[in-house]
Length: 345
Image 1: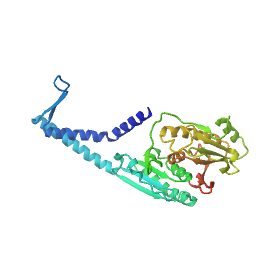
Image 2: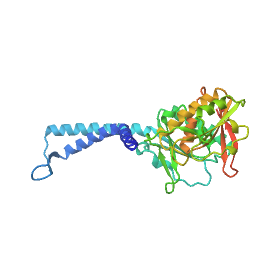
Image 3: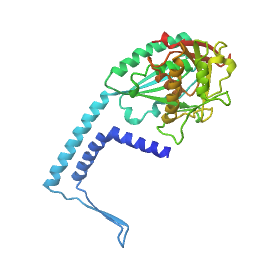
Image 4: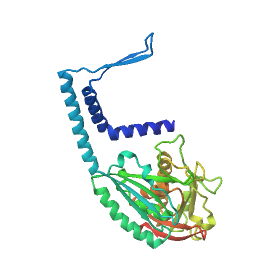
């Protein structure tokens, strides 16, 4: 069912995006068809044959007038549409934040109709360096704000890999211009790797479950954390890899809500909008509920790139507390630095 819905969505979006071109193309073909003098007579399934197609090459003054009208209107429409569309730009923001990774460009993941006027911006940074992340995010903020304000920018595709703080903060930049932004993801285990756009629908739904505590509910844990004496709390999201309790800073370990998703821990399990939105809505509620009692909420997240970015997109200035995002160092197997969103805004 989901595959069928995704297919029809693709057809509808493609039709809506190019319907004017279809009309113009039809008029041009109709005009050219008449100028060639082809009048088609199609006969289906008779006793003697399955079908036949016959044509003649004669036309009179009426056909000639219709030909020129169709052809002229079609050509004028096509020229006008082309000139307008060449003025509209599609931005592909490609950011590789993982050192020593040679990954193909995500250009093929962008629909062909959006590549007519392509602004391809590639960034390579060390997303695991705190100062570099702060500097780059400040730089990107100005860039994207100008793109959101530009009425000629019809779509912004974002393809980024890197540490969670970097991807989260990158997602924060898209909160006000979300309607123009499409976040791509990267499938690492598809031969040499492949960028792709997320599907819209899923046959299943997703919800959060506690990662460790047995016999308790998420609501129980939230109430326990809210009533603790600690002025700070944390949420650990184990979507791609488990998050060990011992890796969480000691002062937060007992006040951390450890969560996984109902589809299980693993790569690329949240590769469509429907599943991600299920979890993002719940996460937004958890942040708001815990944040009513705490000064800060720390985030420790193991998730695929698009999910990390989209977590940043849901942050609400008035609905959520100050968020602290933590970077995981694979070599030391520890969270070695953190950033407050207040340091960026």
